[in-house]
Amino acid sequence: MTIIANPIYDVVFKYMMEDERVAKLLLSALLQKEVLSLQMRRHEYTGIRQTGISLFRIDFSANVRNEDGTENLILIELQKTWLTTETLRFRQYLGTQYLNKENISSAEGEKGYGLPIVSIYILGHKLGDLTEPVVYVRRRYLDYDSNPIVDGVPDKFIESLTHDSIIVQIPFLKGRMRNRLERILNVFDQDYCMKGNEHLLEINEEVFHNDEQILVSRLVKAAVTPDVRRAMDVEDEILSEIEARDTTIMIKDKEIKEKDKKLEEKDKKLEEQNEKLSSAICLLSKNHISVTDIAVQLSISEEEVVETLRRKGLK
Image (tube, rainbow, N blue to C red; front, side, top):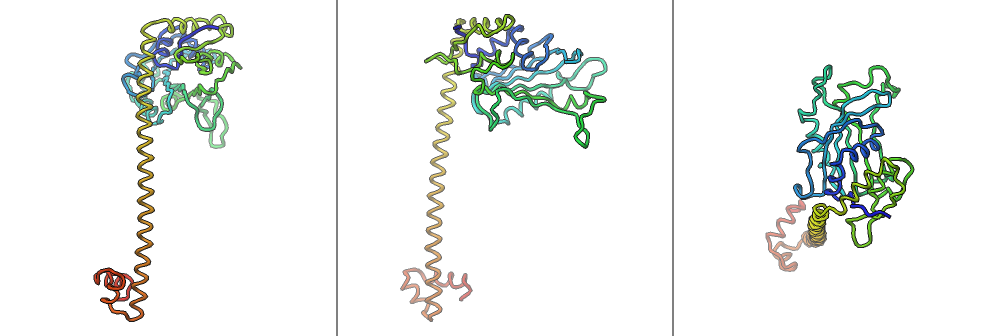
């Protein structure tokens, strides 16, 4: 067994992806295309210490080779979170990519068109009812009758305004190694966490092929790098603060709901009492009891009797 740093931590994942060979290996496997060259976008990293939430974001521009042998430049938007996160955060960040003028192609014949975007979400939590560890959401060009369109595809205009997505659900990895991608993603499988130390994973290095060993080596190095280990401690502290905050909010929400329920029950009981009082007033009035006598019998003011009779159309 080999001890590696846990890449679910932002600092470890960043350390891992800063190695171009490792980044190309992982992204090629996710995209199911060969990444020929790769460049991490400047100023795109936003980590947990800056945002106060466990949401890691990093972008790459990549030259990839397609199945037909053609090559093209794409923008890869990578986001990772280990907590259930509002989708609005993902949408807001995606929106900045569409608005960023740096994402407009400068290639001859493609000026004015945005670079095709592929969004990748690595989630430390489960989605709704989807149980596949990796989910691909791909666009298709269709006519009115849902027949695939072949001629003129892909179109630069459409590629500028729509995008494909890849979603990884870490909880469903569970030792699966049915293909190259799942084998590589094995390093994220939280079932391999060392007992009493979630910073480290114990994995079987022998399952990785020769070209995949660079990923394991990088994470082994991260595990013994003091700065990385200290940063993981910081992330744990921040996560504890987030969980404590969420627990406090949850408790307060529960208290508010309980108070609202009690007020609702109190209002309902008061409404029932008022209805009974109104019925008594009307009954006594129909039996020709005076307003003064009704007020005395029911221990209320004459004004209340008159107002109730007026409301019921008896005065």
